[in-house]
Each structure stands twice: as structure tokens, then as C-alpha cells.
Image (cartoon, rainbow, N blue to C red):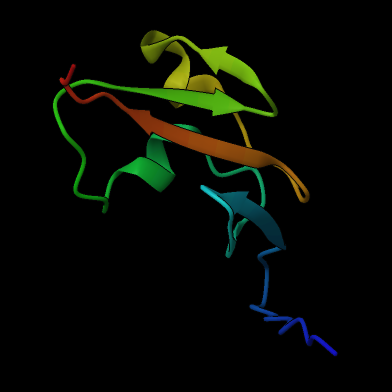
Length: 79
């Protein structure tokens, strides 16, 4: 059995999204840029939203809604 915690903040609608396989609560209509702000990320990474790659210049204008799936993909060297 799983439980979903619902947070109600006066004047704000919350949404649940999945980021790299983990569920997170965000303010609905937050941008990709907003959810990246407090993360430790390498210099090179790619963001996918619902299996579509989002261009870096669109991070601030791409809004998230309930049920969205975000993947933050990083690269590593190797052979």
C-alpha cells in the first residue's frame, strides 16, 4: 500500500512530478529552470520532459504540470 501526501498551501496549487524515477511535489506551473536551481549538476547535462529533449534556452519557459516525468541525464567518459 502506498500513500501520497497532499500539501495544500493557500493560493498555490501543488503538482506531483517524477524526476529521475522519484516523485517530487512542486508548485504547479513551475519551470524546468526552477526545479534545476537547487540541484548539484555537472556542467553538461540534458533534460527530458515526457521523453522529449528540452533545449537549454527553453528551461525558463517550459512549465511543468501534474504527472510530468523529467529525466536529468548526465554524461560520463569511459570505454
